[in-house]
Image 1 (cartoon, rainbow, N blue to C red):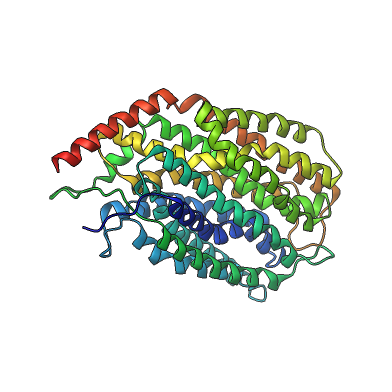
Image 2: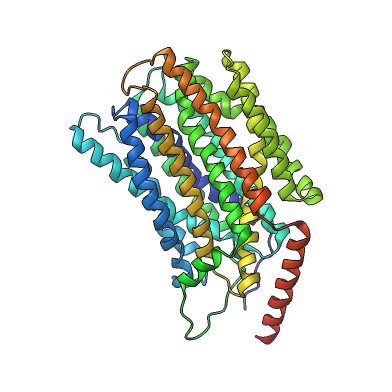
Length: 460
């Protein structure tokens, strides 16, 4: 029998690449698809809100179905549970980015609207096809809690690298020096990001090893209904899902409205590049600090303190308009640095919740549980996109014109600065009140699971 390589830096590098792969398409679409459709295609923001609501709700309910596939059917000859599904979906995901940013502005109104819906749904289902197995992989790469925390940190690094090193540069290609949109720039960026996405997925598949195998029981059938019911008894998972809805309000809402804030209120859209670049020093500090603080005080306490700090500063920014773009940039970056801890630790929380299911039921359903968790991510993302689009229409934003009125610009500022406030409130409620896995309880849980697994191996 071939000896399985021990967990190490190679797996972490692979997981960094895996998150980069999805982020090249996902972060780009999240941040600029609304901008592209309103400025280039001339589609009304309110209509985009309805489209986001329909497409993402479909995606949210579709996720659990696709996420359960690896639990239902093992494909390929490698014995891997999740890698074969990533291989299938990674090319459609790259192509979906091209569809989303194809310039069809010369088409008739009906054709444009149909195309936008089609492209966005293809993107959503393709991203589900890769993100579900990728996220679930963490539970089979290793069953060690410390090593899983390293994977969670690695995953947060992947998205951060793309956000800082790639997405931050997009405004330089889609806006000219006068602050006007460059339609062809969106598609060119989509081509580059699609190629980089496929390269990174190949690196994930090469570097990361699936180690935890679940023996098949003859005659046993997968019962998705049973797994779904167990979630309502999994209090830690419910808390993480609530907090994640808040986090996605920030991630999606902030990215979608950021271009509007800097273009319309500050008249400096290219400053968007600095939004990501200025966060690099904070990331360099948090990267070694967060694991140490989590080990000493517990990851739950770290998130609560950081979210509380974020809430206080965000409230000040919401209530006190700052006219200088660079002063706002610095204070806002310091405020939202509190989200860094959440981003770095959330995936470790998720694997704890998946293991809590095994602790309660004695069964593993990694893919299904992860897909149910991502339902909360899609709900948060849907709410953010829908609220952003509908709010733009409600405050008088007019698609296709070069500049909005001062009143509209002021409302955009209020909307952008309120989103982090709502985010922090939901995170504090989810992790502070609902999530109940303390350090002591988590340690006890893993001791019981280790004993069960050891007994199972001995019996086998």
